[in-house]
Image (cartoon, rainbow, N blue to C red; front, side, top):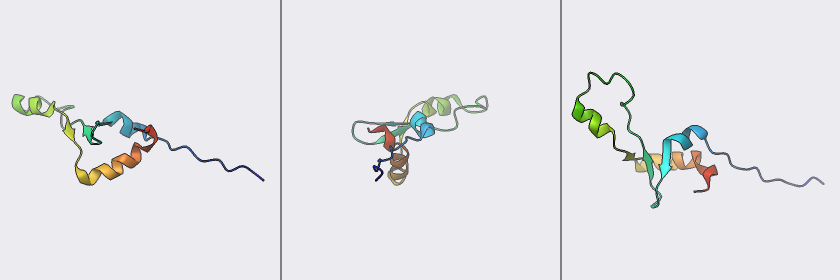
Length: 72
């Protein structure tokens, strides 16, 4: 009889490049609107977009599923 093999979980590589897990199990992300067409945006706005923000509580479940294979 064939031996049953457990399938390894794979991490979604796009999500792994975009999200970072913190020590307190929260997920950090980069803010949007900072890639192009920056000339018309105010200096203050661009400066504030530099900071990282935390993913909202309602989205953490979905992102955790994508990052499952990391084992973090």
